[in-house]
Image 1 (tube, rainbow over the protein chains, first blue to last red):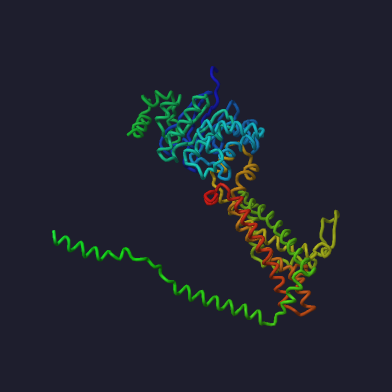
Image 2 (tube, helix red, strand yellow):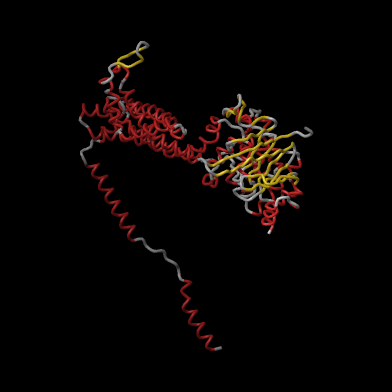
Length: 256
Length: 290
């Protein structure tokens, strides 16, 4: 292999009863790559993203992060679910940013960012504090360090959430519609932070409706519909001259 | 032009009252109601002052050693029964939401039985357990006579604590349910184990919901311990009774006990305020006042 593969998904399938949410989805993401997953709502984008750190269980297929099988261990001809502690250890290397921020409301911005490295990675508090403060400055929240989430705007909360993911120094960060719950005027401040993060070489998978962000920042764009990966390729190609008529239709509908 | 002047002058006159002073409505009904209630209150106070109560007995027995010992026993029983109740409550609540059908059914059965039977009856069953189980233990390993173990203290603690556990488990369960599912996901996403997630993220938020009703139940428990007087546990009411059996000043001693219950409950209410404030940090209503 010429490049480091960070995420490799093979035939990931997920069923909700009779409904097929994910139908043999495949994906390969290289180190430092930014991949935007677009598609209509209900197409399985978020479900697939959540499978990558096993917040969602798959019915079949497998995912590797950094060459390590996620959530399962091979025993003979079966893949057995790993235990709670091993699962937690794997998730430490994958950051996640949620649509609804999900900051811990009983902790200040700084405490939110420090929680993982101190409690989970067991790093020294003073060291983590320094790093967390630097990251909060970097996302433009130097004056909000001691604020509780309830005292912050949606855009500020989402930037704290990104800082929380960054402070774990993960191998990649997953973004699940990070700007969908924001007032329109707050979207750009979050996208700017994500742009900055992408420029610093972080591997990112972003489920989004922001085609402008996808065009400017993403290397790869994937289009999903009805649980299937319809098209995936370089951002410029997929967004300007898509191969699939469904992708073209979707992009036209979003722009109009 | 002139017709316009006429109309404007009449309207000016009509709206002149806008400059008058605004007088709030007088709440005659409220005043009458307040007067009646105050009158009744005065009558009650007077009845007590002219009634055949020897206030000197109340004063003399307020700090009598037997009363203070009883108070101490009441407080010890409150702490012991409540501690047992909270431990059982947390365990039963986690069993209930565990998703394991056997554990969940046992938790439902526990709540059904121990919330269903009166606390006084449960105390008496524990105290009289020797009637059906003369000895207890593991055969061959150890064995003892039930009457030696089932002291009034132990029987009261088990009776009150186990029935309290049924109530507390519902409080804990509602607390766990009140925490948003996004919080569980965020905790997992930063690599927390189940146990760490419960301890660092879920329980601290559940506490905000759980503290007011648990505080309420602690206060209830202070008074519920008086049931233990029935099985000869020497808490404050029991000791007050022993004294009035001797000196026949029934109401005076009951007022002494009442005084101490009110003191304890008042102190607990103040403590509850500060505990609620601690667990409410970060929530809107609290931060707004900071």
